[in-house]
Image (tube, rainbow, N blue to C red; front, side, top):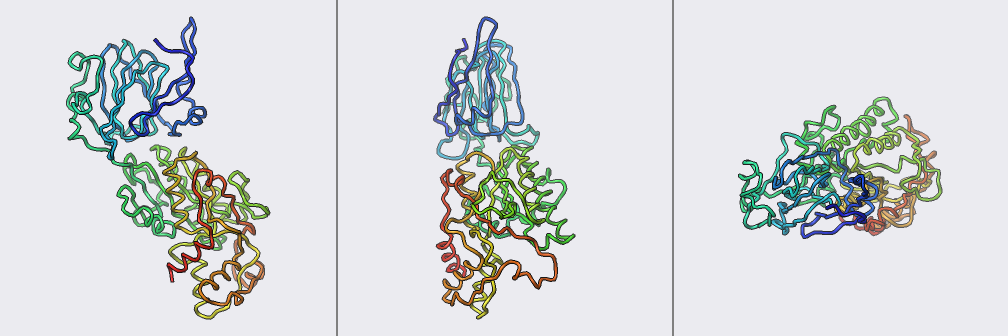
Length: 471
């Protein structure tokens, strides 16, 4: 009989990620009512924000109907609408918990969150049982499952009704025993734009991780109008978009404007749609250029955007496009420095060649080293905090471009007084083409990402280490 008046709460199980949930059920002489799925309350209570996209119901006529053990490449929220079942779960994922077993009786007041790769099975204990489950990926005929035999001797599931007397399909009776099971590996992660500064940093931080794939323009053209068939997306759990149009001044030209909108908005939308349609997590990189820089204090994630130029407009629109994927992380960053042409390398080269440059001194911000940005991405995907926008730069006192140039000169053993500070207007006074407006204040508030447990490296030590490493 269904238990009424439970409080919404979860209980961990011996299988990592598998959660048993108590659901409040309100009943009287007319019957009962429950909220079987309520995202806001359940996420607040500790349920992963798994973004379901499909709801399935399996109706079972007879007591003893037994189905499983199936491990699908998606997460599931399992419950019953009517009746009662004995549920069994076996971990079929690679790793130390492979073969772990958990069982529980489920009535309408109980639900179970089943993570990807955990085998799921049930046996009905009442006639006319309706077994329901939400999943965070659409069913597809090319999806690869893993299966375990219901009678496996190692798992030794204690079925209340003997399998000899149960209703079991021939297909389920033919599944392999545990030693022959295809172990479910981690879902793949695809890094798009893998040959840029961030892409190279991600290659370093993910080195040796066989589930990570890297795609440059030749392997995956993000401007292709149809990405749905570019991969067998059911094999993936995450897309990291490290591609971007970053030629800020070129974006002010007719041709550059088209390129910026194509890469920074249209391509982002297509990637986000793939992530949405297949239940993937989507990571996208944005910019301080979404703000006009008129504020004196650091910009928080919820500050209204107000881009000044075309590049900033495309980055702001790209954030909106990325949010089409329910499971999205948008990282706003500034002044990225990595393996490639960048401001720091230019200043180091000028210092070494005896050139005394004029450098802008009325724009303030913080550097973001590409390896720090890559570490932040890895942290978010591992810690799984709430989806949304996060600011991420290195920490430390904000500086102007001229300040940073002087520091580069000093670290490399050159006279920092050789750097002359000039205003942005003075610097571009002789420009022969349109110059994109720059935000004067690019300082981003980092408290939100720090609250997740990620604490970026201070900017100046990171700059010293970078110059030593690239010397």
